[in-house]
Length: 192
Ligand SMILES: CC(C)(COP(=O)(O)OP(=O)(O)OC[C@H]1O[C@@H](n2cnc3c(N)ncnc32)[C@H](O)[C@@H]1OP(=O)(O)O)[C@@H](O)C(=O)NCCC(=O)NCCS
Image (cartoon, rainbow, N blue to C red; front, side, top):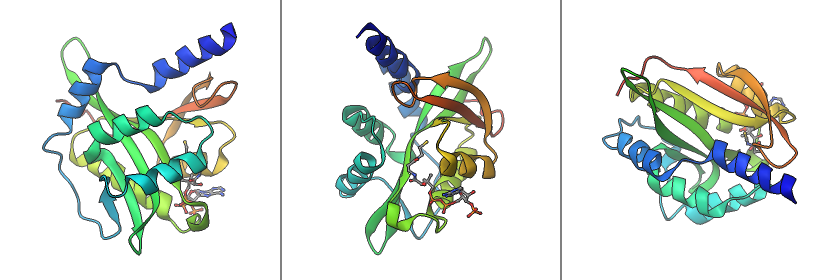
């Protein structure tokens, strides 16, 4: 019981943003510079039901409220892949400030990412992430980080392919009792 509580607090701390950082991060995505793409669109309320279905189908640890909150606050950095008008993949990034003694940096976290099981292995996941990485660069984000379960070989292979590196191994972030890697991709200085 106590163990479970400690894990919940740890998980929540690493994966969520406190209100001021959330608001600041959200402000940083105003006037977001976008790049056109025929199949990838920004998340909107019409697509939300499909995106939520994919989220629920693909993850065992679900935080419905947090997921919706990030989609709402970070609409510019939440992408959906459409196949004949149907959502077959999505990725949700949030942006947050990192303060050093002399500067404020913009960094991003890949909060959630999934491709429909019937559409995997077709390059959709890679295109979604490349779109996100490209727009992060366009908008001077300095670094993208993420957490992934150590056993999730497809995802880890994809992240490595796109240049992410493993920083360290952690417990309980991807779910109670699960080991995961913290990975990141450095993009540049990204001063605000
Ligand atoms: C991870 C995931 C999004 C990949 O999506 P996808 O559209 O199938 O991936 P892509 O077809 O774009 O594959 C791109 C690269 O990913 C890696 N990859 C994808 N599937 C793989 C698999 N089953 N085994 C090993 N590597 C794999 C490969 O490096 C591949 O490049 P290649 O085709 O040149 O070999 C998908 O498997 C998924 O939704 N998984 C469940 C949800 C999840 O785990 N999300 C990540 C949470 S951190």
